[in-house]
Image (cartoon, rainbow, N blue to C red):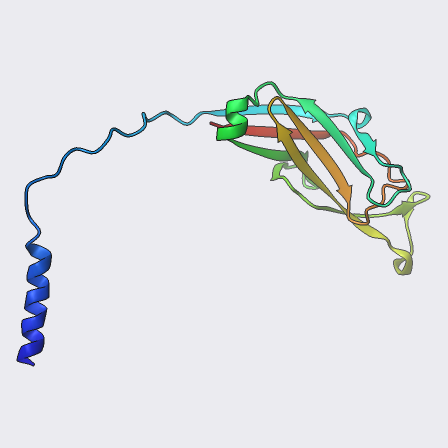
Length: 163
C-alpha cells in the first residue's frame, strides 16, 4: 500500500512540476470576420419547369435553372447555401421546409381518387444543384415516371447564403 501511495505522489508531483518560463508567441491567427447572411426569395412558375427526357420515359424529371447573381464564386467555394421550399400548409400556416423535401401524392383519375385497390401513390423530391451564379431545381418522382403528371405547380423558394 505504501508503494502505491509513493507512486501516486510521484505521478502527481510530475503534473505540478511543469512550471517554467513562457515559450515564444505563436504565429498570428486569421483576422476574425463577421459571418454574413443573405436571403434570396423567388418563385419558379409552372411554365418555367423543363422536362428532361420524354414524358413516358423512365428516369425523366422536371428541372429549372435560375440565375442567382448573389451566389458568387467565393460563396460557392467557401460559404454555405441552404434552400427552403415555402408553402402554406393545410391549416394556413406559412412553412419553410429545407430541401430535399419529400411530398406524397395519390394519382387522381377523372376528378376522383382511384379505388383503394388501384391507388398509385408516388413522391416528389425537389433537389438543388448549384454553381456560381445559378441554381438548378429538380423535381423527381419516386416512380421515375413523369407520364401524365405534367410539370410541377409554381413553387416558392428561399435561398440562405452564409459567408
